[in-house]
Amino acid sequence: MLPEELPDAPIIVNPRGQRPGSLQQDLFFQAIPEVLRKIPQAIFVCPSLRGDNESERLVDILGIRSNTKLWPRLSQPQLWTLFQKSQIFISPSVHDGTPNSLLETMACGCFPVVGDIESMREWVRPGINGLLMDANDASAIADAIEQAISQPVLRTNAAKYNAALVLERAAYLPNMARVEKFYQDVRSNT
Image (tube, rainbow, N blue to C red; front, side, top):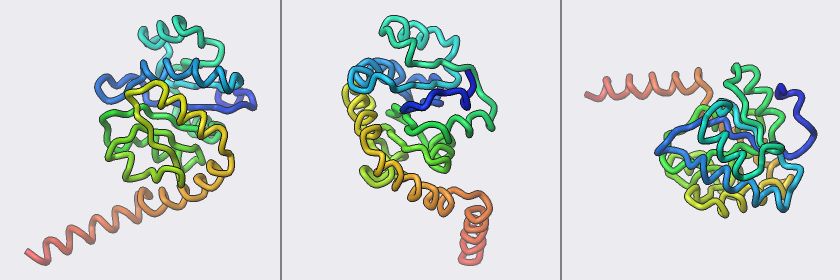
């Protein structure tokens, strides 16, 4: 299945892969049955997790294979298509920097639901442009996903906010110009 072949349903994308010590992917998978009890049409797409033994095992044990798509690694254009088709980006982060996938999904209009850690708080204002959640708690992950799915107006408003935020703070050329100016100012003052 390709990103453009996904059904018209709530799509939750988790493109982070396995990052032991940084992401709680096991708790993310444990949250899925809770979400499906309330929103049975939800589809969870996880690029780069096909063939990952732990992910495959959890999907089978939890009985969520029909709503959970473990995909191979995608090309960048395929990822962007997936991000544009998805409503929610999830990153169960407990330790992380600012992931490129967070910025890319925000630029594509995808609503971020991320671990409540400092690097994510730099980008996400809860209830404004995303949600922060306790990534060490499967129920908290499920609650945040359900909350995001159930608030289409919040997601629409956040998409506009996030597009402007990413353009302002993460666009390469203007920000590299600011960095250059900063270093020139530092050199001039020493």
